[in-house]
Amino acid sequence: MTSGLIPCSGQNMRSEIYRIIDVNINRATEGVRVVEEICRFVLEDSKLTLALKELRSSLSRVIRLSAYQMEAHQKIRISEKLIGERKAVEDIGRKFYPESEGRRGNIESIFQANMKRAQEAVRCLEEFSKLIKPHFGKAFKNIRFKLYELEKQIAPRVSKAVKLDFDLYVVTDPRRNHLETARRAVAGGAKIIQLRDKTISKLAYCRLAKKIAKIAQKKNVTFILNDYWDLVRRVGADGVHLGQEDLAKFSIRRVRKELGADKILGISTHSFNQAVKAEKLGADYISVGPIFSTPSKPGTKPVGLRLLRKVIKHLTIPVVAIGGIDKSKLPGIKKTGADRFAVIRAVLEAKDISQAVRSLRKAFC
Image (cartoon, rainbow, N blue to C red):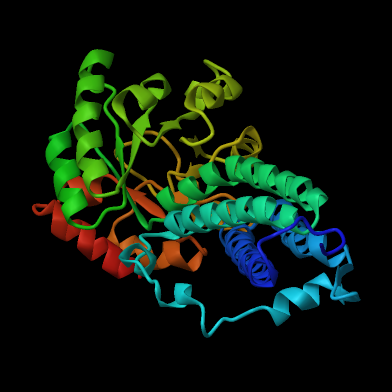
């Protein structure tokens, strides 16, 4: 019996155990690294990035710090033994490449695949490493549970980042059929739609929202409700957009609690202070406006491009320019650093909604 090693069925089996551990350390660290890059470059979250970096280091440190293993009456460094037993060219696994591995729909699918990859690999490490030293199992189990907790923190944020990856934000209006607007806007390439109608009952709004939610879900389009945060989950929407008047009616904390971490919360702002406050309250995005004069906000003074530029410079969450925006205004919007804008009339008053959406998006590129 080799000192410290639980008996396996001969030297060959012991060799395969080292290979299993080696490949799963690589698999786990690679998976964690992919998630780390998402937190660093997509979420731009330094705390999560550091937590994943430290976890990645812990994976190899568990065995590296255990130093030596007695084998053939000699002390052999375990980390060197793992590399020594590696047979990458001969590994039958290198030829396996399922169709699912060749496709990724978006950043969220990359996150999910690599988080699961890391968790499964650490579970293998937890089991097979016990055949070298029993205490390895506990160390890897601790890492596995840290991965579960990090997944809970990161998953909803990645999901929302994908849903908020858009340029043109289409807001519907009762002046034109909501369902027609939604269908044609989606056909034109719109990535996010908000149902806005303050003239109908809540029951009618709910029925309408359910229909638009189905249209959006089929095309992976983000669907936002205006005002009715308590209907978001009932109709299958992705989130809600609230105005400043709504903030005086109820607590944003209550709204967030009811929505859950995975749903989007957007807030309208009309000043720098309101924008800063909205971010502090936990908004996932804000709109700033009206940038220009618009019939949608009669009697409201435009806030202008200067405010838009200032807000974009100081906030870290997505900022959507809104109010009086048409194709002719897009160059000025873009110069502020904005990468998202919302429209109502520029789409709804067009003869061909789909073409209007395509034209606006192309002009903003």
